[in-house]
Length: 143
Image 1 (cartoon, rainbow, N blue to C red):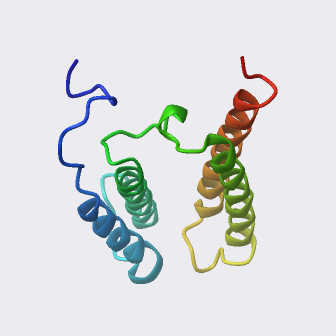
Image 2 (image 1 turned 90 degrees about the horizontal axis):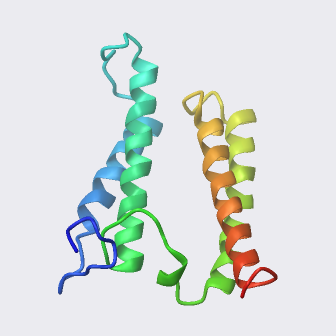
Image 3 (image 1 turned 120 degrees about the vertical axis):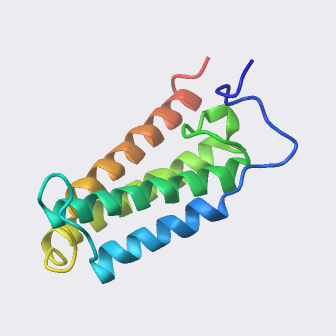
């Protein structure tokens, strides 16, 4: 169909190492080095947040490519080997991310950029919602 079709695969899987390494470097800069420019918005802390979010996005892309051996961003349930078991693991991981967001917003707020807890809670809630959707669609709401 085209290069945008997620079901079209090439013979060789996409590279996951480069986005992963760049994502780790960007997150290390955000958490440890804190090197940023004022940017067009005249706020170095906002630039640092953009750098951190970019690192998280690149790490997600790297994980997706490594896990599913294809390009894309959305983990369709037909790509999963065992959706019921994976959804339970994702639910536990989502709750753990929510706990981490609370810790980062309350106890680690001096060491991390201010919106870290908010961003982590968004990611955690998305994980929980997707896990509940998969559990329901393969359980009580299945055909």
